[in-house]
Length: 360
Image (tube, rainbow, N blue to C red; front, side):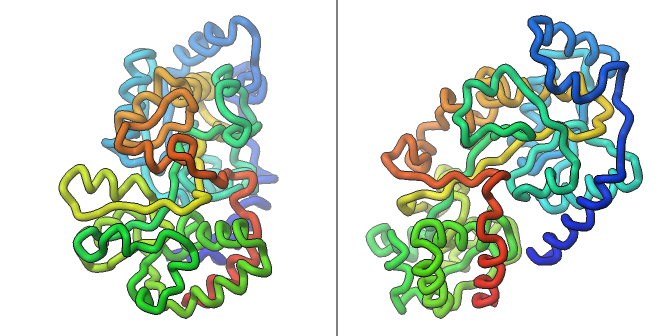
């Protein structure tokens, strides 16, 4: 499996390659003109171009039948003349695939959705700035010139309710240092939204000096490093293989709980909030259809409504999650939050990588 350091090296290499790669626009209008167009006839212009293209391809880290297929089916219902395709994998594997396609001048995807990866797509030179009329409905931390938040993930202390009572579960960073938890806490290793995000959160909450001192103490708790998906870790907590997972996605145990699994989650304050983002890929073969898909994914009555029904946390502020998910959303549960997005997710990257070595 690719390590965090190897991934950083890969991105640097691809960024250089991206400088010399140029793809021809899909029509007489340049991709940049299509992506940034704000005229009153924008919708008609995009539909006209999309009818000629007749296709759009999405690369995404979302679960296929839970979210990708429902979103594309909803899009297809609105635009029946546009065929859709998709590829699903982890954020890292998607970025590796896009890098390979760009080097071969054979880009297959038009729209990219990532749950992690930081500023890698921008460093690769793989994305085209875009604008959508829907973006004005989103908070500033969820919008950028090269991406827009599509969904959120919040993180907490996931635990097995048969092994621990809620009152026993650590509710603060200080609680995590209790000697009784040594060897009983797992986390997702070598992931921008796993152990690395936990490091960033601690450093932001406590400051670099106090945070570094805390992390050195925390490392003595013999945290179990798991290089598997966040979903799998929660499943194993539910099966009793691990007592707790620190920094795991907070929605997974609640979904499992509805199905009868002995899982629950405690949220720390402030709560880390990571945003998954949607991008327009530079050199997309179908830029008109791509912009229509991006618009649909961001619309509160489109992709955002579908994500709510799929047990994801929609990024649109006017689309609250399902009722059983509200307690893990800071704005709906009285908690403070620290938002991590592609423009700030790599905060203190070198310091985090150095500190993570304490846990190996």
